[in-house]
Image (cartoon, rainbow, N blue to C red; front, side, top):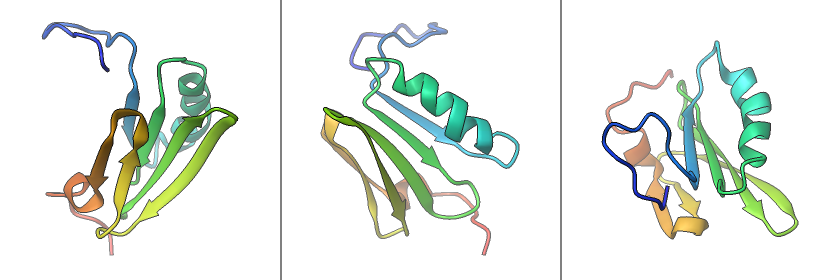
Length: 101
């Protein structure tokens, strides 16, 4: 969010980027229902879904003509979040995790 948030807040006002770590039990809902809900939220510019078994992210980004999807794979790649001017190395996102072989 780009808005102030108190330490005891249960709700983040005007989220700009949302990260989701996918699991076997929630991945289908995260990719469909949640993605649609996030796309319907005007403040959200990026929705990043991180796989928990492999070094892969799917980044949905709001564009003037709709939503663009980018698949980012490999620990040497980076997730680019243009709306907030941030580039996150996949190696950092997956630091201290154990990925399936």
